[in-house]
Length: 197
Image 1 (spheres, rainbow, N blue to C red):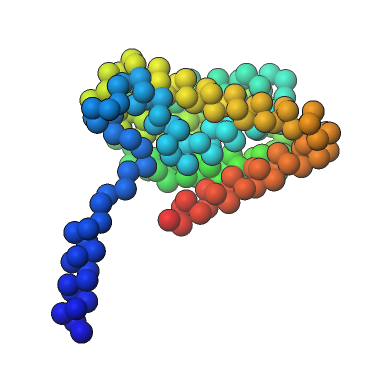
Image 2: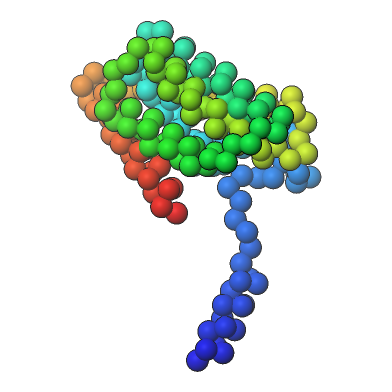
């Protein structure tokens, strides 16, 4: 019995291929801009957090529509540069997953903060997202890769803002706000599930 178990484990280990959350910028099928653009779009953690930033900005309204996503993008670029300059940051993945939960909860609870506080919270987590982008840049060209993930991130923020602002128009204020809060709760739950994987 032990011999059969060892053989099965060995065959499974040899047959298993590594799973990558993002396409490799080293792969010849990806140019630098495309590698940067697809990086945030191929990881559920990045997508959930960045759309949640847009949803939360829409809930906060006013100046937050600009300041919260702009802070995220700006600080994300700083995190990206810190990775390129070799700054060690051993807790990148846990903080990225925490960002999904925290930003999802901010939406679910309709956390009422000032645009400045919202920008600080979003910016804090953005640093870790940016560091992850820089850490996985591979052989991609710095500027093209950076432009790619900045555009993708901004697009995800815009999608969240559009959904957040559109929900009230489509379903009425009360139902629209409830649907946004439910989406925030689902985001936070998704973050917890990603932590468990």
